Length: 170
Image (cartoon, rainbow, N blue to C red; front, top):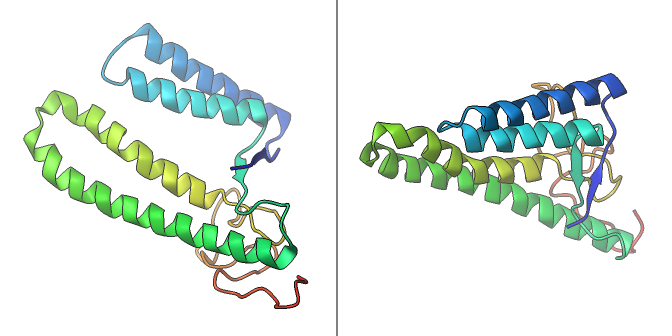
């Protein structure tokens, strides 16, 4: 999977995110508790976004294929990522209903974080997918609007169920 980092943050914003991330890591390591692992993971994510200057963009199709094939394959990838994200949320709910009542109270925080982490990863992978036509983010970066479509590229308006042209041009 090809990942590119989009520099969307100003230099001061990237520095602030990196400092915040490193502060989370140091705090988590300095005072070990049940939140040590979550603190390190979340701090590392903030630091990576800050050092790279923005969020990653995950390619939805390889760029070595023809344009229409790239669009078709990319749309299938985005639809599959969306389905996996929603199914993982449903699976998490079922696991939480079954496991949380059986656990001692001191393990609930850790189990919550460990089980939510894959769900969050699937949603992040879907939400940071690149459009196969314009290679920009499928979803709007920054503050989402209620009027934003989840089934159309916010940049080129390609629909999630649009078929690419048969002649190979896009």
